[in-house]
Amino acid sequence: MVSFAPVVKQLRCIILLLLLAIQACYPVAIYSLFYANRSYIAAELCENKDQPILECKGKCFLKKKLSKAREAEGSKEAPSKTIEIVEYIAAPVALELPFSADNATHFYPEEKPNHYAFQHSASCLRPPAA
Image (cartoon, rainbow, N blue to C red):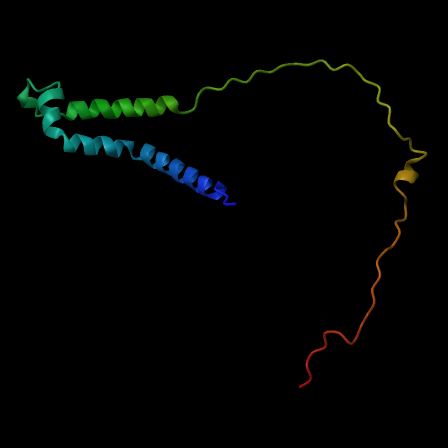
C-alpha cells in the first residue's frame, strides 16, 4: 500500500510557507497593484482629482490602503492577556505510606548482586603480522 502521509505533510508545509510569504509581501502587492492601475486610480478613485495643483495622482488612495493594511496587521498582534490568580485553601491530609522504615531494606537492599562477567580471549581480533 502507498502511504500519502509524507506527501500531505510536505504539501501542508508548502501551503503554510506560501501563506507566510503572501502575508510578508502584502505591502509590496499593494504598491505593485497601485502602479499597475495608476491611471484608473488617478482618474476614478483619487480624492484630490478636482485639485490638479496638488499633483496627487492617486497617492492619497495608496496612503489609505497602506494605513488600512498597517491597522489590520496591528490589530492582529498581541491580544491583551490577563492573569487571574485563584487562591485555594488546602486542608491538612494524613498520608499513610505503604511501607515503613523497618521494611525498607526489603525493597531497597544495600548490596546489589554483581551479574557482570568478563572472559578474556587472546585469539580474537589480533592485528595482522607484518
